Figure 1: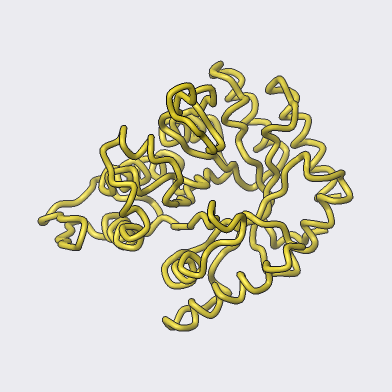
Figure 2 (figure 1 turned 90 degrees about the vertical axis):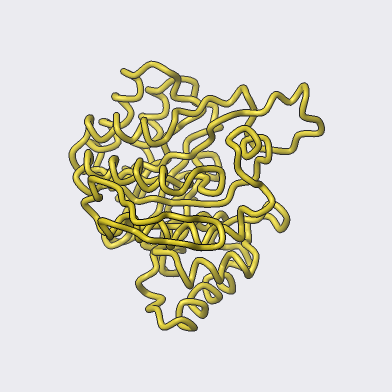
Length: 302
């Protein structure tokens, strides 16, 4: 069982919560009242029509409902007082960096410093096209975007001229409560499965405040992946112990004994956070998701 130093959170059931604001309110407030430390939300702006886009191998389509993540966080901020709001992840490459900085800062202000911004490059070229960004350069742009975000969050006036961005003596106002907002990275690979590429692991270690592994603790490559993040951090003079790590377990991955074993295994591997995802578990009402996270909370804190 994980100890108290590992923060326990929930994944907001984006695709299944529905569009009733009362259902969203009830879920978010229940998560806080149950003592969860944070609520994670996934991000997609548009869904592809798979009748047109063939063949389609993506996880989500036009049938998948997603609340817009920054607007939803603004709503959640007003409904709660303690729970951390976490994106895992915002697809940074398909958005204007300065606008993300502004939206994130506003959520941080309205929540009194409760935002943790997870970012990633995504996998969906249909979204990139619709949002007017270049899918082919998304990885190369990532580090420059993260550098610019931190500057916009900490400096009143920014003069930045990079490979992909130009800002001439301008800044956002208000600045966030947290300066900078914690900036985490998603870490997965559609080509290799759940284990990220060495390039992604290196980027996490060099520039991120934390990361979200997509693999389970018993994956034979898990220890190697974590070691590569730590080595990359040390290579640029960073303390690897200062880099957070949040794996998750799906409600349907196993029984409560399995959840507990996964939590204990991840704690032993240095995880700072751990969360439960109840989506795609056959839970057909918001109340069913609330009951599921209640069950998880009782098991994992035992």
